[in-house]
Length: 306
Image (cartoon, rainbow, N blue to C red; front, side):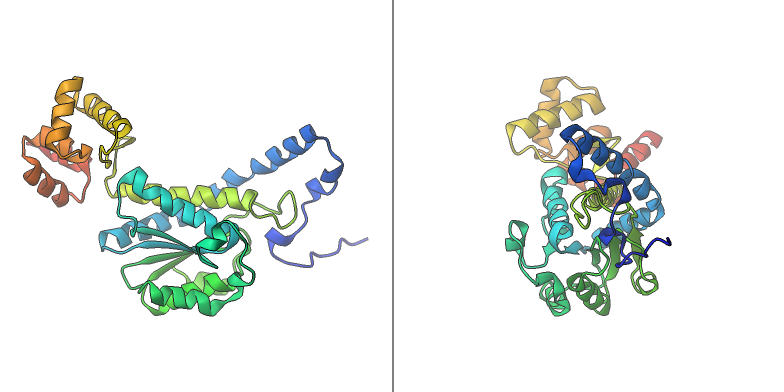
């Protein structure tokens, strides 16, 4: 007998033959099969690495023009966008406006389902107008199924307002998406363990991609030196200790000189490093850093050349 074609062409809505009898398995067997399915996520992301790199470049370009990276999603996709955005200020010391997360139904939808919110293209459009999206911004839509009206409405309006647009999905994109959006990232993780439960593999893939986009953009902006987070401010005891240890390691200082240098820099690790390398005061070090696009490594390179 010829296998019946799937009733829905979207990968996220298809049944996974590997888990067709998962309801009869033991706890250990369930854990094993979920783990096996999860192992498909990283290779699926790797297959889209060029598109991810373009998204990083678009985010960096937006930031350098004073614009924003704004995620737009619904349900799990929206929550993951809000999560990634919320982690940027404490991790990299940026203004909370630089990376924003919008979820259909508003912040109520973070904890509770808001019925029908994702079905309104108009609501997505209105959100772009309310945030005065413009040419300096990068609007990144997230919809595992690829079909969420709210997200496409937001991206359409963002495009009309001159913004760059990106789209992340976990099924095959329609041809029009590739033509309309500036970058499309299609992470094909396959059908879920539980049919349609995109908080699983699709959600994991989404978090990996969003982490890569924001982390990559922050690195490009000079907020990392080597693999150290250096664009942080010592606002509490834990961060003061971390800041001092970074200065001790990168500048070969003892604790007390590192502490004094951090104080002189106003609690900024980046400025402290530039001050030490160039012999400049805080104001001149800040100007030097700005001249190099915020990249401490470039300041060090030039300082050594001198």
